[in-house]
Structure formats: structure tokens, C-alpha cells
Image 1 (tube, rainbow, N blue to C red):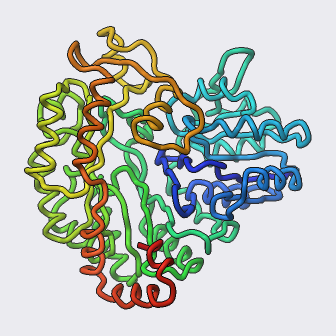
Image 2: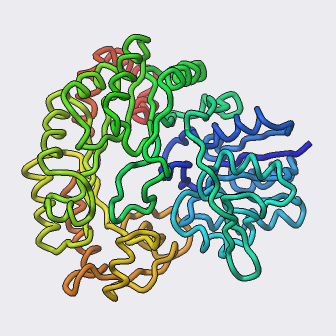
Image 3: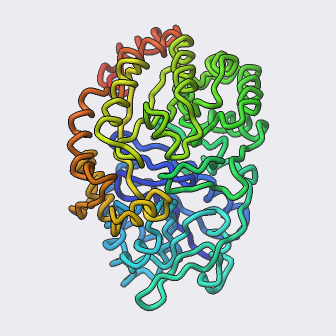
Length: 475
């Protein structure tokens, strides 16, 4: 009987199957993808199964390594982030005493580079984690399993694209095998993929069939099951969909079911300005979906068109108006350095979100030309970029975004958008713009939460009287 270990990364940065990356600087969060994977493996095979979440269980690296030596797993599956995977080298040293295969689960760019960089990885599953991992355990030779990157000599080899399986085939995660009482935030997935083809998106149009959603009955059943494992109310649920509202009819039906079932939840997810309307806003608020993020990217219609955003400023403005009207906690995302950008267009975008939309919570980032995107190909044809590696992205996250927990120094990248705007210019603009755009407005957040759920005053009051420090952490 095979002995399997499901291991959350030993660092503070991990990736979900749909590509959502989560830096965990405070309390650990439940990993939905690993939960589903664990359940599928348990339901399909006769195996010994163990789950370790070092951050939630407050385990040091040495303690994790000692536990691995004690468990002696045949396979370790871990959802790794390519830009912060240096701990894999240290875990690889255990192979001298414990003969296990390390399977990295990654849904980000640079799979070929990662499998070559970390020789401790026996196989890298890029997409379709759940079913590819299951097949790995069934196969005597993982190099015959479709959907895996492996090493062959000094080169990486991709075994081939596997058939996509719809996310409605996901079972309820194996909550009972995870330290659920130690989580403050819980992840779920209601829909997946995107039907658009933005120029800069590293995921492209995935899955091949376009955007897809799970059945409403399964979503409701999963929420009810999750609520058995935590007494935190309202249940904080982060739905990591790229575009929950891609099909407004589906979301409206889902909201009505949540209301009918009287589920005490508060949901944070993403929407798309082109699919948001007043009826949807009303239903989402009643259902507890009161935290929404949406892409703005640019305040210049020409730039949106050049980057295939399939979005208009009118739609952005209407969405912002509705979110303010219905007291929805909202955040907009903008990017600097998209194709066609100039210093003038970037600062016009700043003025648009700050002074016209008047959004309090704005996330700003540099548009990175990932190698698998049309954006990269355009810059390469122009001679504006030669190469981009995970070490370049690591440098950006560590030195520009300030993620100090990332190991290693990284390598500073170099590219241009045009003859007058290069990477150094973008960093300079970002550092000037960032302090002027608040990424989180605490006063608005507290007001909107209490506005939608007045009973929180009493709940928070009890927490404060019981322990002021716990209350501060909760906020």
C-alpha cells in the first residue's frame, strides 16, 4: 500500500490549481486544491494518506523534515510557487534517507525552467492537478502520464496535453484531514477559467472549453459541509474564481439559493465589469457576497482595446457606481506598462481611478510580459525584450512589491514598452504611485460589514471584552 503525503509549501507563498497565488503573511488559509486532491486520492485508491500544513500547525522546517522521516512517504505532492521554491532543494536532501518521489503542482509560467532548476522534482504537474496526480499513482512509469514536465538529461520534456475534465467532477474537499480549526479563511471554487484572451494573461483561454461553473446543488452542499468544521460566523469564504459573474444568470440563481438556504456566509470574490448589473448587485449583497474585486487595468479605452480587454470605460463606471450604491466592499486592479502605454496614459489611468471613479481600494501592479503571452511575443519582435525567467519575476516580487519572505535575490529584468518607457521607468512610476493608492480601506471595510450585518457589533464586542488581542487579529 502506497504511503502518500500531501504537503502545503514550507514558505508563505503557494499556488492553487486555477493559478490563484496566496502570500500568507498572517494566519494560514485552507488550500482548496489540496483538499480536493486529497479527497479524490482517498476515494479512488487504497493508500495511506497524511496531510501537513506547516504554517497552520506552526511547524518549523526541521519539524516538517522530522515528520517526513517518520512517515517515510512514497510520494509527496505539494502546490509549489515557481518563484519561491528554493526550499525544495533542502527537502531533496531527505531523499538520501527516505526514498520518495516529489511531485510539484504548479499552474504558473516557467514549468520547464522549474523542473530543470530543481532536480529534486520527479514530476511537475502544470494543469489538471487532480486527475494527473491520480494517474501518477496508478502508473508504474510517470513519464507515460500525460500532463507532466520531467527531465530527460539536461532538457525538460512535456509528456503531452491531457483531456480536460470539467470542475463539476470535483468532490467536496477532505476537510476532515486538514487542521480546519486553525484556519481563519476558507477557499472555494465556484467557476473556473476565462473566455477572454487578454494580451498579457499568462493563463490564456483556459480551460479549452472556456469558462465553466460547478452545479449550484454541489456548491450549496459543499458550503454546508464546510460549516460543520468551523464555528466562525459569518463564514469567511474566499471564492477564488477569476470571473464569478462571467454568466450572470448562473450567479443570480446561485445567490437565490444561498438566500433560500439562509446560509450565514460572507464572500470575497472577483467579478467582471462587463457582466455586472443592478439586479446582480442586489442579489449578491443579500447572499453575503459583499467583497468584490474587478479589473480596470487602464483608464484609456485605446489601451484596453490594444490589450484585448473586451471592456469599456462605461462598463467600469457603471460597475463602480453600483458597488458604491449597494455598499459592496470593492477593489479595482490597474496595471502599468501594458502594450501601448506611455507615461501620459499611465498617469491618466491614475487620475481616472483616483479622481473620477474615486475608488478607495486600488491594487496596482506592473504588467509583466510572461514568455507564454502574446504581449511577450510583441515585445520580442520589436527587440524590446530578450528573455524573462522566474528569477526575473522573483526580483520584481521581492524588490518592487516588497515580499521579503521570498528566498534568494532574483535577477533584475529588462524590457521596454517603447523607446521612451522601460522597466526602470515602470518601477519608478510604481513607487511614486503606490503610496497614493490605498490597497485597503479599513474604515470603509468595517462600515460596510456592519451595514450589511449589524449583529457584528455585538459579536465583535464580545470578542474584544474576551481578548482585545484576538479582536485586533480578527479585524
